[in-house]
Image 1 (cartoon, rainbow, N blue to C red):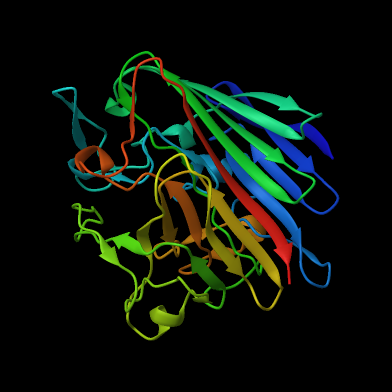
Image 2 (image 1 turned 120 degrees about the vertical axis):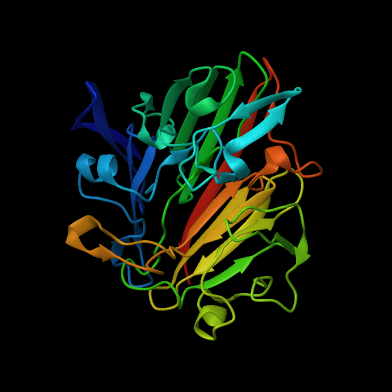
Length: 338
């Protein structure tokens, strides 16, 4: 197990570093630009290694990228309808970067920031730290956030989020890694299971209005493993960008398992967040690592989160972070083969 650091350029006068975590099987690359997950090298059933995370070859790609590749998302992951919400009787207006809505923290969310960092070789980890000022992208209160990535000897990448604010605010962090367990081409043949009985339908702007629907009998039923593309290719759905309900916040649960049959790679997702977003890269069109074009359905995302638009949806697990109270959450990506 080891942690290394190298220079990776600069942005807005701040030094950007590339960190590498290793154990006997996996190699994980991270950067303090956006506290982003740059790559994970994972062996297949024949012990041939491939990078299973989309991204770019250099810092410039992350600075200019449009798809939040691998980044930590905040202050509020996913969408806030109308780019506004009411907290303690006061209305807050947020940055609009998705039509009339706020997406992934706004125009300059956490994915656009250079974070401080604290590598820990003994724990095979790197912690990224950022202070989000009061009013940033319209969000109330100043927030100190830390995101700790740890690679264990059991082939698990743990992401631990902590935050404290100096006033009441809303907070919903996630990681926006794009996974491809084959390491190339489409993910429609990847077999996926999501342990969720319900999902939240949305309007034409991808904003949930509070309805909950059960998955049995629908294209959203991943209770038993099925190919990601099964209902896409049959025309039942054009692609997934949907929120699945996992249960209560604070309780660690096995949210999803993805298996890529050709390579044999498996990735299980554990989280204590109450929901998870499945996104099948429906709008992806960029040039990434090695000059490869990332296109539609070239990857899938499994973003652990509060339900989108939760600040405007009473009755869902609350995303409100009270003044002085510590937010804690952990998501784990566990890798293997079969």
